[in-house]
Length: 313
Image 1 (cartoon, rainbow, N blue to C red):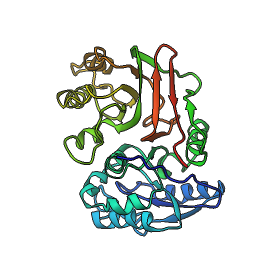
Image 2 (tube, rainbow, N blue to C red):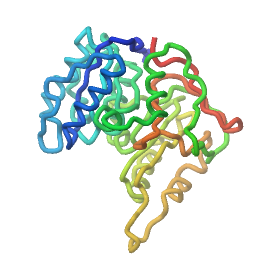
Image 3 (cartoon, rainbow, N blue to C red):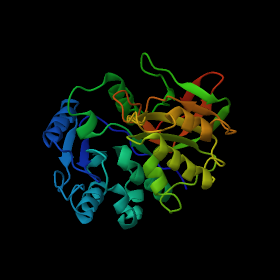
Image 4 (tube, helix red, strand yellow):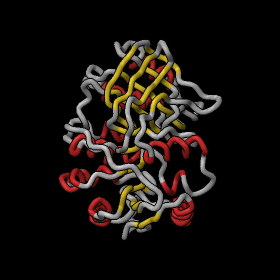
């Protein structure tokens, strides 16, 4: 599949806002996020169905799909930012008009539940998307400067992204030594596994896989990693990056459990590819935006992760 990069975002451009998964509990976050984008010099268009509830979904499948399609079809919209994750994106995968999206490439941003859409867009359209900050999660109150700077540089500059610089008091760690290069893909571990065996997940061969998650205790992380192992997923990739696994340790002191690190060691320490851990990406404040679909190089000897190209044109 040929990779398609969206056009870079410029001051004054129109940003569309949709909620393909769940709606934020506090709807005031929407207005606060919109104000943030406007203060940064952008115009904002809310999806017609933004703010709706349908149980844990942000409206019906049809309503959420209509917002997704209308934003891609709207020639004036240059970027689409999701409100939040939650759950609901996987329900749309079989209903999306991928030819239309392929013919209207634009910046698409989100993470967590949005992983399902991003991997489908990569597999079906070759579209570069961005695992980055969401309006009602990261842009509604005090904005983390690290997250902010990385994100805006990623979607507004057509220069090579280059070396990853970690935030202060944080550094990547090495589980398995080596070098690897390939197009980066992945995202939320649970959402990735939910698409295994479908046509909505990119082929792993010669790629770099990044994984993160939240709220999955060790036995559930164990089950998800085992699913990747028995699917031979790790045999085909050129490198693995573990982001942050937030709130994933067992807190019930009465329960017998392995630690998260023991689970990682069991499944990943004997891989024949470079494995890097503690990368600043996931459900965290200091969140490095990942442009899925562009080339990245891992070099554990140099302790370096380098994005070899720009993510936008």
